[in-house]
Picture 1: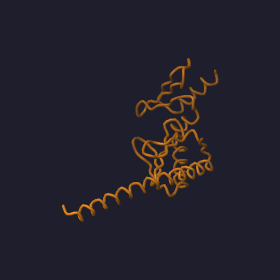
Picture 2: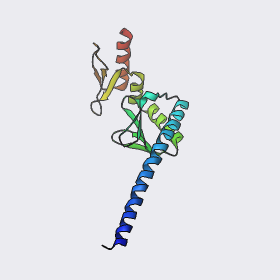
Picture 3: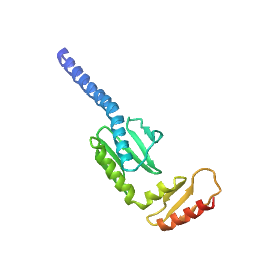
Picture 4: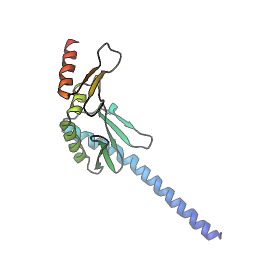
Length: 164
């Protein structure tokens, strides 16, 4: 291969590496800023988060734990969370307030998620489409509670916590 072709190939590789590095640096700068705006918007909507609820993945994305089992991932281009059975709700990262409004509606509309927020000392799990259970977090003598109704589970958990 003539030298000039090798130089062009090297230059193309350098440009590709530079672009990858630039995207990564942009993400490192943009993601924390987006997460901050998103959390501020959630707070305005009554959803409180703490600094300890935010972690960073190996790929540089930020993850916010809203309630047990409700994780919000913030990338440089999107904000997303699981909505329903294996469906992602995805919102552009350039509109963190809109994403916060959607998430607040999602949290308010899902009785299962409301249970997780109301009873943070319990792991509340869907065993099947109809059956749910609550397992106490940590080493406690509290029982595991199984039922087929969100309302019934809430009543049972309130009764158990009232006895404590």
